[in-house]
Length: 368
Ligand SMILES: C[S@@+](CC[C@H](N)C(=O)[O-])C[C@H]1O[C@@H](n2cnc3c(N)ncnc32)[C@H](O)[C@@H]1O
Image (tube, rainbow, N blue to C red; front, side, top):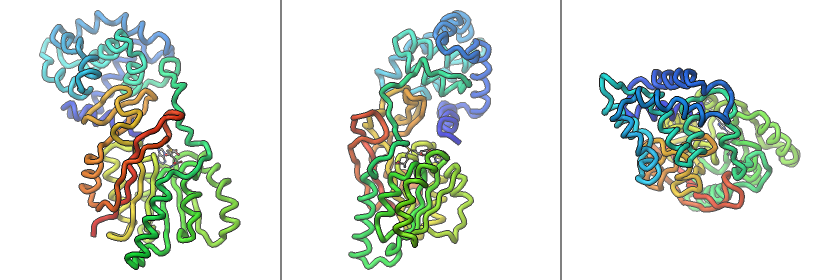
């Protein structure tokens, strides 16, 4: 399930609402009532303005006062949406119950009127998930993921291959002398091509949800497979969590690899991905290598802060976690892995053209 859906549930849980599905349904119902779902993105601000008085009556003076400072709380005081909702829930009274749609649309309206149109649009898209094109409002001419573009392998590939060489040479480690890689979110094969350039890699399987990315991957891999017919290479289309769940354990890989794909999963799903990878990787020997955006990334702090202070819905409408080194290391250790190396790298990485970005490069192993 895309991270926006699971993180929206997490947001409501963090705000102390024990039935997140009911919260989501309520917001959607209110969006329908206001007419946000009628398909005309250019009139969202007008619709929010038109319902302003009705929303104030619905919320009552106490909640209205709380939300008056929402923009300052979110953008100048290091607050987040979960705490606003948490306070709103606590301040709600019998006369003015915690009306989620009223709260969400009032916050969005405050953002619009304080000149934060793109943040308001990203927030509404995240909360409401109405099926229409918000493109006019949150056009992103600067955003250049370009993960469909053929490019040099990410530097983590070379770091990982060097690490494996050191391990094999220095520790006479037998478990890694022939490397069998499972790549999660392999895309068009940028990193796969780097990985299989090592003779030590004898098998590679890539998983990706995008068929067109896999088509391009297949095409690009053809000359390599012609030159190395002994290399096992296959691709699976699907959601990587579902594929990992059904991955036969006897299909042992000794390296799981993922670059710029794990941010599509919330903390609960990451736990499951680490658990599932542990089923495949031999404890103490197998490696899980991944690259993930981190604290001080170019998009950390852009959009609307959601919860726990490093999860944001960015202006492109996607939610992301920007962990600090400590936060990420804690998660890895908590999930039963030992860290082999963990470095912060600063280079372009599927964000804005020409801009550098902060990425964690991690190699870890399931603890014995
Ligand atoms: C930023 S791209 C990175 C691609 C590749 N790792 C690279 O560095 O070139 C993220 C990739 O994750 C894939 N992806 C996103 N969600 C996925 C999911 N649930 N299961 C499998 N792949 C997913 C996307 O299709 C995309 O190819």
